[in-house]
Picture 1 (tube, rainbow, N blue to C red):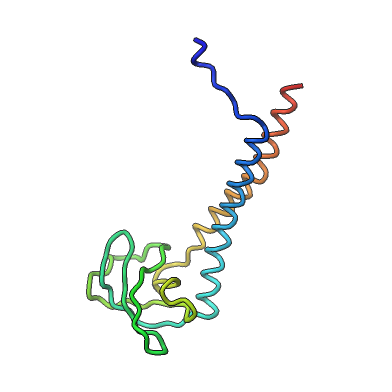
Picture 2: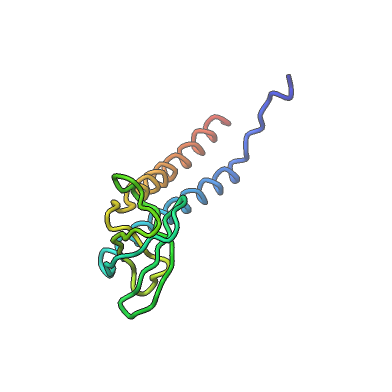
Length: 141
């Protein structure tokens, strides 16, 4: 039965992994909030033509300065109703400083739900890791 025994990770390893996970989740939450804030404050609304539908929708549109851009719509909340088909027009908002990277379907809710979940996970980890470390140290004594 010796093979059933599980070796627990050392305290420093557990702490480092916990801190890395907390910072990673915190950074992802912050980047989602920042993207939404940028699109809300600096975004330009226009209409885009759907050119490909897969897990994410690929669109093509013309920026205010006349450039043609083909990019993926940012993942976010689902739009109610059927997904648009190839050739259909959808309303989007894009960041004029990064039109290839920052595009959101206007009809979809902002990605705040995901940001709140990631932020909550980061807060939970920020509390849970030290508590687990303290409990483990007390158990050793």
